[in-house]
Length: 109
View (spheres, one colour):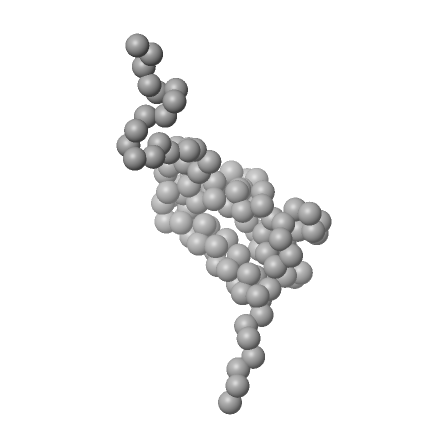
């Protein structure tokens, strides 16, 4: 019996819903109180994903097969970082290679 290939949109929908549930659960377990806006964000985004399969309407805000836009993904990462107790998320910073200091770290001399 041959199987049909999995639907990428359904997989993205499941992944996004699971990520939203994990973020909410992580905040609850850590005892972190989310702001009213963050709590509403998690609820409204999950409701839109369940209803429409994605949480954004403008196709320029995200890839066609994704359920969350880029900014929604960033906000979700920030909520997860807050639940973990991290002060600032560390994405977007360049790391020096090979343990050498960067150009601004070298002392002139």
